[in-house]
Length: 136
Image (cartoon, rainbow, N blue to C red; front, side, top):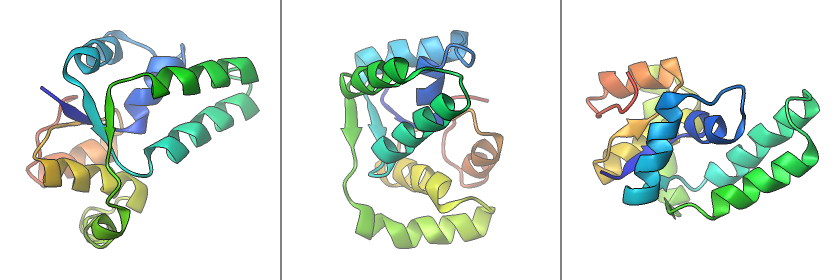
């Protein structure tokens, strides 16, 4: 089944110190079923990698490879940013989330798809909103 993937999961695929069995299973599922990401995903992913470079977790070449890897995945990029912003802000207020995290929850609600996240606060909000969560 296709899922909405947040950046905590995507970064776990490319940062070796965050990689694990759950992330690997999600990547395998994505390779077969595909996944959905919001309009902010590319910028947020690139920013996470840039922070990793600055903290000496990866080098610049690894960042370049990770960006290429992500572009090759079977991801449907949602482009409805203006339409989604109001409901994302409402979800952020209702669940104490950042707007960035609320955008993932909103996309999962709108597409009626489960959400894959390692972020505990987003996972709790996902449960509260009645959206299926891939990672407990």
